[in-house]
Image 1 (cartoon, rainbow, N blue to C red):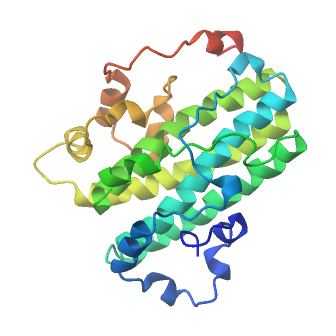
Image 2 (cartoon, helix red, strand yellow; image 1 turned 90 degrees about the vertical axis):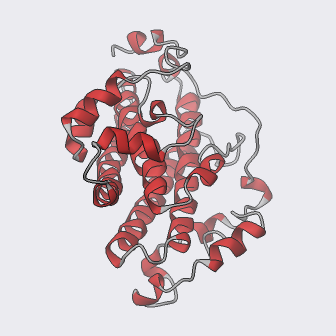
Length: 276
């Protein structure tokens, strides 16, 4: 339903409301994932189709304008929708991951649905409708790098969701600076849930980590260039959030120190303009 239906309303139906009991939610064969990819999934209606068109997110200092906040939330909601779909894909792709892992995917997927709905409601209040701006395919571009359960969690949970621990901190602070406490509260709720999502992914990661290598080395072994550890943090790094999620101090330090050829390309002057 989430992958095969083009309708947004179907992608937001919680698994607890699916027309099957909880046991049946886990009984999906791997071949179904291939079937969906052969039909160019995820299905999307024309109003929410993904594209390669560029859509700039407003700068932090410009979040004093309601529409700019709405456009930023549109950007975040797009990420939530992709995460919903990719968790659904993960459930299909890794049916033998274990009941606990699959239940964690289902819980994370449902929380992503809740995030989307919070963002959509708030952006609508600010005059922006979902689909008003181009919807990128950022997460889906990495799907070929997520073909094992361990790589799936390294890319989605530890990297993309891990980076969101930083971005939620930045945007909450910026919104509070501009006095939009209502949106800041939504961002805080998303942050608290993302901690849980990263923890779930980290549990899978730790379970699969070989005894003879450290967690940082193992993490790097699961990533395929040009996807690098840089994608696992925002342009402002908050190491305390990774400690809260359960990472080792060694990993947190290594991630903080990591640089690649793209490091430093982001103009950080916006941070100073909103008191960060």
